[in-house]
Structures are given as C-alpha cells and as structure tokens.
Image (cartoon, rainbow, N blue to C red; front, side, top):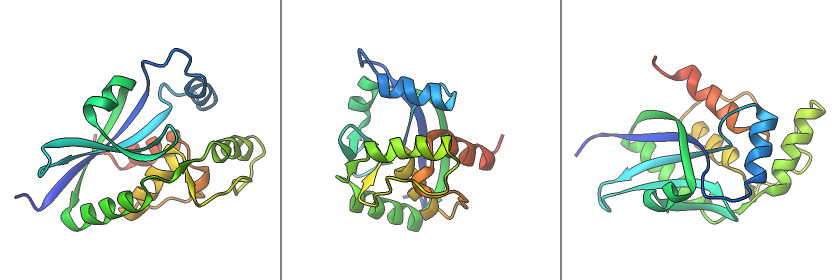
Length: 167
C-alpha cells in the first residue's frame, strides 16, 4: 500500500442541464470556461473514484459515474499528498458533508467583487459553495490563501492551484 495518495481538483461546467443559468452567470462574471470545482479521490477499499463537492442543495460525496452524467471536466490539477493529509481531508469532507448550499453566499461574493468588499455581506459559516468548500481543503493542505474564504471563486482556486503546479 502506498504511503502517498493522489487527489485531483477538477474544474467543470454542466452538460445535461437544459437551462444552466447559474453556471452561465458564473462563467460570464468570472470570464472562465468553468463554473464549478470539485475534489476527486480514489478509494482503494471501495474500488471507486469519489467526488466531494458543494453542488445542488448541499456539500456531498458522489460517485464518478453519476458525476460524469452532469459535469464536463475542463481542467485538472493532480496533487500527491501524504496519508496523514489524506486522513485530515477525508475527516473534513465527512464533517462538512450535508451542509446546505449557500446561494446567498454566492450572491454576496458578487456584491463583494463589484463593491470591493473585504468580507462577504451574506457570510454564513454553515453554508458552502464549491469554491469555499475546496478553499477549506486547500487550507488543510497548508496552501496560503490571502483572501477571505467566503469570497473565493472557482477562478481564485484555479489560480492558487496553477501557481503551485509543476509545468
């Protein structure tokens, strides 16, 4: 058994949504091809790739086959982590799984960007959007994030990962 594990952060957009207005707005506002970020990991004991994300109504785990039915992956960042880091991430994911999706939090991110606010006006530590959920995982991995986590966008997460990527 390997001492290190691989996790992958994937940036995506919806594929089977007839009217993905929220995704369109995020991509337009952020000027990106993607509107979503999630963490993918392989469970040896289950022989499955599992995704942790904030989507739909809450933070959740979802299997790769189901995820691929509604998401088109666009960019991937694969990271090798220690077993201890993996356990810490899994504990965090389990502890936050089921937290409600923060639609008002997302709206607050827009207001903060438009009005150059340093804090989300709709701050709610009991709700998540995809980028805040993944931002918390990056903090657990000792990534330095200078921005309020409740203001992190998928583009911010992409730039953080890109700056650390080996090219």
